[in-house]
Length: 211
Figure 1 (cartoon, rainbow, N blue to C red):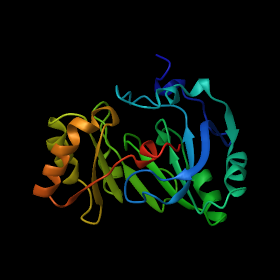
Figure 2: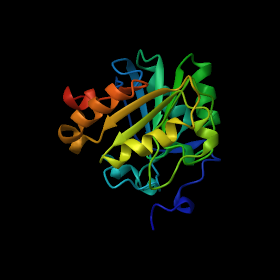
Figure 3: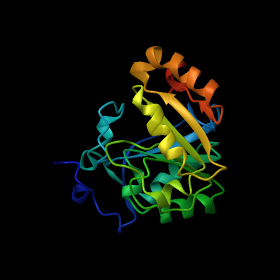
Figure 4: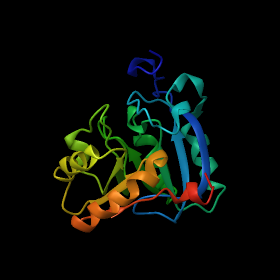
């Protein structure tokens, strides 16, 4: 298969497969509404059937860009924080990228399934676990934010399973899968009312039509 781990390009050359990079607002989770520069790395073998960026799965379809080039893209904007997402960004070692971001006084955030060991130096770690490739306990333990996508009713019990594995300081969010939002939102609201440790996350960037 094209998206097997051994198909991903090596990054020892200081390059990463960049699908897209853009300055926008964070649309979901704890930092919702804040300006952020998004770096979407290509390559993923988690394979969520409802993924809305399936074009990010195959790393070989996207150009390798030097880490310095990626940093330069951010520095021409007023961005104060960078969100590294994917694909699954932890397929790659992110130590050098995050070190250079911090050297330039850019806060580092990651959005990950948690399925690969943690690398990089992070100010905020958002773990969004997926059923197709479960998160590592070592990554869950360091999560600042647990964001569980609710696609059907069984996902509530699944969310509680992972809530029991994060620290007591970790923020807990339930987020409807976009295509099921109208159906699942009332159930999410009722669940949160009965379990107030959870909060609602909505993809506001999709409602206001920004990247």
